[in-house]
Length: 198
Length: 191
Image (cartoon, rainbow over all chains, first blue to last red; front, side, top):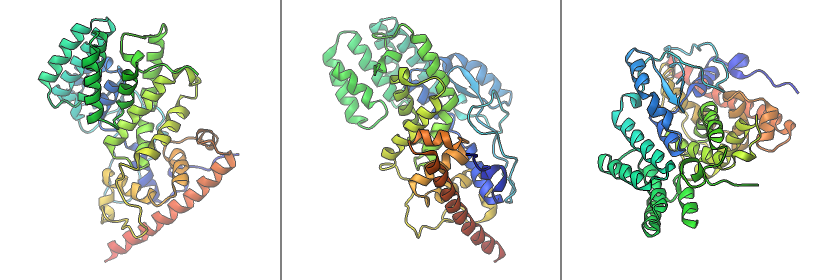
C-alpha cells in the first residue's frame, strides 16, 4: 500500500502548509531540554559542552545541546506577512548538526541554570563513586545556592538516593514522603516510590 | 521481562555491567527522538512544560525497558509511549476546550498575524482539537512527524488498512476545518 503525498509536500493549500510547517518546526525551548536531561541523569555532557556553546552563541550561531552532542534547534520561522509558505523541510526525525538561528537561546546565557546542572552533576558523580557524604555536601550547596532552583525535583531525588546510600533510611523515608507530597504526579514520583519500596 | 530500576542509570547501587552501553543508547534515543516525542505530546494538547515533563517520563520508561526495546524500533517505542502518556496527561492539562462552537479565530484575528509562528502553532492546535483523538494520532504521526502508515499502524496496534482509513478521514476533516478558517479569514480581509 502506497502512502499518499504529505499535504505539506504537495497537495495542501497555502494555509494548510503554513499550519503544518509551523507545527513541524516547533521545538521545546532550550531551557526545557537541560531539565529533561537532568531528570534522566544525562546532564553531564551539557555541563562539559557549556563553555564552547556559550562561545558559539556569542559568535552569533544559535546552538542547542543534547546529551553532549550539538543539535540544531531548527531554523527560525521566516514569517512573511502573507500566507506564502517556505519550502517544506525534511521530515523532522533527527536534528541536523548545527543550524544558524536568529536568537541566542536564553538557557545558554543562564549562568544560574548551568550552575544548577554543574552541582547536580558533581553530586551524581559522587554517588557513582559511592561517596554519599560528598554527594550530600554537593546537594547541601545546591539547596543553599538555589532555594528555588529549576532542577529542585531532580536534586531532591538525588538527596533521597544519597541518604539511602549513606545508610540514613529514616531521613530518606521522610524526604521521600515530603517529595511525594509536593510532586505526587511529577515525572520522578514513580522513581521515588520505587526507591521507597526497596 | 526484566525490569531494571531507573536508579541504575544514575545511582551507584545497581549500575549494570553494560551500563555505559545502555547509557549511550538512551542518549542516542533522546537525541534522535525527544523533539518528535515533545511535539506529539504538544499536538495532543499539553502545554510546553507539561509536554517536557511527559517527554522525560517517556524516556524514564524507555530507560527501564531498554532491554525490551528492539534495535530499530526505538522511535516506535517512545512515540507509542508518548501517546499513552498523553491520554492520561491531557485530562489534567488541557489548554483548550473542545466545544463545537469554539471560535477558531479566538487568538489570531488576521491573516497577516498568522505568519507569526507561535500564533500559527496555536491556531494549528485549535484546528487539530476538532479532530477525533483516534484520527488526530494518525494525522500527527503522518503529516507532522513523517512516519509511514505501516509504522503508525504497528505503533498504535491497528491494521494498516485502518490506519490508512483514519488518515484519509483525518485529512478530510483537517482540510474542511482549515477551509472554513481560510474563507473566514478572507472575508475578514475584504472588510
